[in-house]
Structures are given as structure tokens and as C-alpha cells.
Image (cartoon, rainbow, N blue to C red; front, side):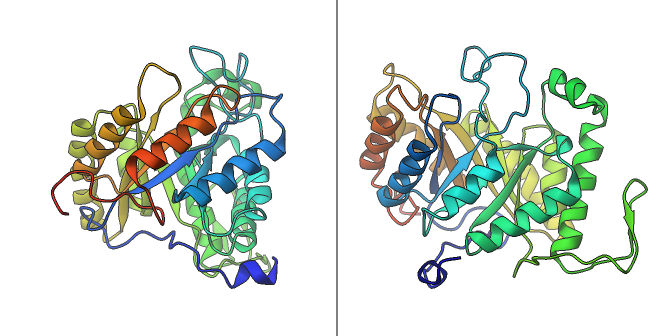
Length: 315
């Protein structure tokens, strides 16, 4: 890694003590990766601008082999650029922003390789990488990859346990009933701290997974009130396990039917609901993404990754 970058002050990617949020909400950008025609340089420019505008982090989606065009309604599949490879590129052109996946389909990834890729990204980025994972929802991709769709939850748990095991320097022997190695196994590069996980999804299984592994939880498609109810349940589970989880959500603003002021009001609603983090996808790269990203930054006053007091509660 560039020596100049290694001396930068990076944001803390490990969440604070579990429980309700105590500071201002962090605002993130979910980058566009829905068009094969978009140049990689355009992705880098958006990541750099997001950082300059004051957003906390930049995130990429993941789909390995969707059964339809990327970006097209109704699914709007994202992930044209393979997320982990692309984030390695973005690590070299950014200095402060958190880099993460929102979210990687973990059961479709070989777990030993995922452990090394995530550890390498942590090293390349100066500790700015967060591994966001989900179990997936599209059976076609699992069939194409030869992975049992019904096994996706168990596969995700096994992958996360292996990654955490290797990132903590535990080494061998290891045997989870499916993958095993003895004491001769060597794992490098070992991250200074285990790469934090973000667990995506609204189900009870997702909440259980977030409480077990700690890190971050990201809701999708919930209203702020629904989010607050699930977040409270998550914090109770995490407290019982002695883990730390920061609860957040992901939303979208992908067209002219809403104004920046309306989106700022929605951001304020998430702030009031207690979200620690909020990721925003601004639509297609060639259809106003950058303009909407700039407009929301101005409307919210985001700075150093966090929004000011938008709720009027003085929290």
C-alpha cells in the first residue's frame, strides 16, 4: 500500500458498544454497478467524489449470474463489476471512506478464498473494509453454481465462522464437518483486527446471524418504524450473546419523482428511528446518480461521514 495512504486517519469500521445508537448517523453511498458499459474509471470517480462530499463509505452489490440483464426492472440486478476485485481498485483511489459489499452472496463463494480476499482487502485499504453478506434470494444463481438453495443459510454461517477463525489467527486444526485442515495450515495476510461483518436481511435468521457474529446489520425494504422494532430485538439478542452490532438500513433514490428535500426528510426519519448507518443507492450511473448524490449531500449537510442533527432532538 502507498506509504502516504498508510498514514491517513481512516474511519473506525468496527462498531461501538452494542445497543441503541449514541452518536450521529453515518451516511453511505451504494455505488452503481448495473451497466456493463460503465467504465471502471467512472466507478472510481464516483467513489472519490462520495468521499470528498463527506459520505462515510462506498459499497458495491453482488450477483454472480443473474437470469436477466443487470439494471433492468423489476429486479435491477447489480454487480456487473465483481465486488471484491472492484473494491481492491477503489481502495487505491480513496483514502478515508469505508469500503464494503452490500451485500455479497456468501454461500456462492468458496470460504477459504473469501477469507483471504477479505483479509487482503483489509490490508490494501488500511483497515477500511467491511464484509457485507447475505444468503441470496435468486434460485437460478444457485442452480447455475451447483449449490443447494436450501443450504444457503448453513453455508453462510460456516463461511463466516471460518473467516472469523482465520482472521483471529487461530490456525489449525479446524474441522466444521465440511472443511478441515490440520495444524500445518498457514493463513496470511492476517488482518490487524478481524474484518467486521455486515449481515444483510430482515428475517429472524439474519437477526440471529448478526447477533452471533457482531458487527453490522443492514435492513432493506423496511419502513423506519419496522426497522426500529427489529433493531430493538437485535440489540436484545446481541446483549444476551455479549456481541456488538450497529443497526442500519439501505434505501434508494433513483429518479426525478422525489426531491432532495424529500430524501433529506427520509434520512431524518431513519436518524430518528435510531439507525447507526444508512446506505443510499442513487440509481443508474448514466441517469443522474452523481447529481442526486451531490444533492443529498447538500440537503443533509453530511460531513466527516455523519449527518448533523436532522431530527431536532439534539441527540
